[in-house]
Length: 224
Ligand code: SAH
Image 1 (cartoon, protein in one colour):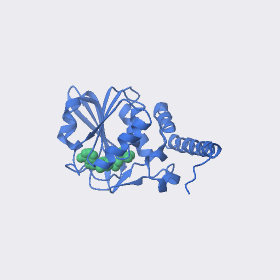
Image 2 (tube, protein in one colour):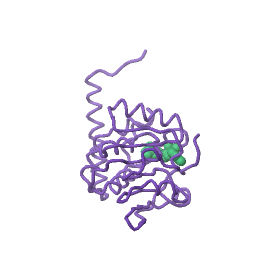
Image 3 (cartoon, helix red, strand yellow):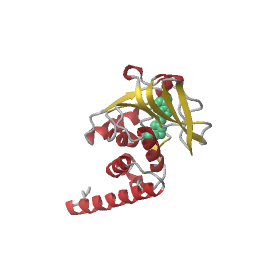
Image 4 (cartoon, protein in one colour):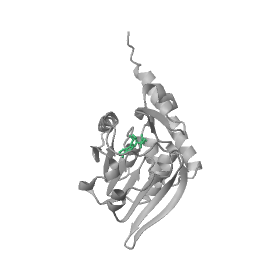
């Protein structure tokens, strides 16, 4: 027999989950995340709804978790750090995300930017993420099933680009689709030992800076 939780039990669970989310956000603040909008978005988006049933109880640990197809949902501190660095306190109009994955980072960005374009090379992941975001009522997100190494040219240029998989080198198409004044965040380096690079386009060209050591699944060419 399948038993659904009583309304009281469901409310109790909601309470526990929002408390755990608040505790996670407190930890992020202590680790140096200072952008109030980013912290508010992460307090709002229910990370446990972006992982499988069996992992829900671990959703508010500050760790990456498997999401199937040999991919992972990024660690909350990395999501917070990348989002804060991308926005830099501004409301961006057009943002490209490469590597939709679970859709968690997508939802956090969708809270904070005007239009979000997100591409993923594994079909079941993009479909699941599309469903999750539709269920949560986001209307400013456009999903693409494509190799994001090529960017997404019909909607370019972007004033923000966030790559959530590790690249061996920065794909040329991505810097080409970055608007003047735009910022890109991309993990670059050998597998599992990348550095998170911030690339800004000024009128005089590209300026690059390394922000932190990170470990991402690889950015792969082609669609799966
Ligand atoms: N932001 C996601 C991270 C998922 S892991 C989350 O928090 O859930 C990185 C994702 O990048 C994987 O889903 C992987 O399939 C995807 N990916 C890797 N190479 C890609 C490419 N060239 N184009 C689009 N997506 C890619």
